[in-house]
Image 1 (cartoon, rainbow, N blue to C red):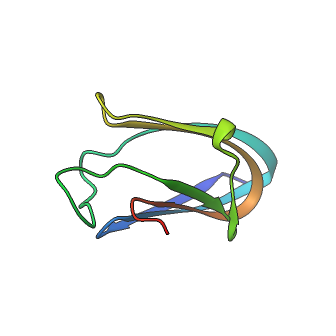
Image 2: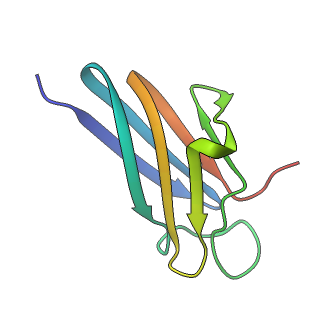
Length: 87
């Protein structure tokens, strides 16, 4: 079986559905330039959730200069949700 990913982005939220053949660790690097921000000039993530639970800040980082998000997580099937508006 192959791993499947479905990505959707809209107004300050990026959603990545992951369906892997087995639980595995992912090291994701994603450009965010094409994601419409909820406010301001560019998408600037403030929270990353996996299946409704906040990922610790040490598991993700955002390079605002390059517009690149890096996230480390382990899952077989789940939803990664990245938001640019928090609180």
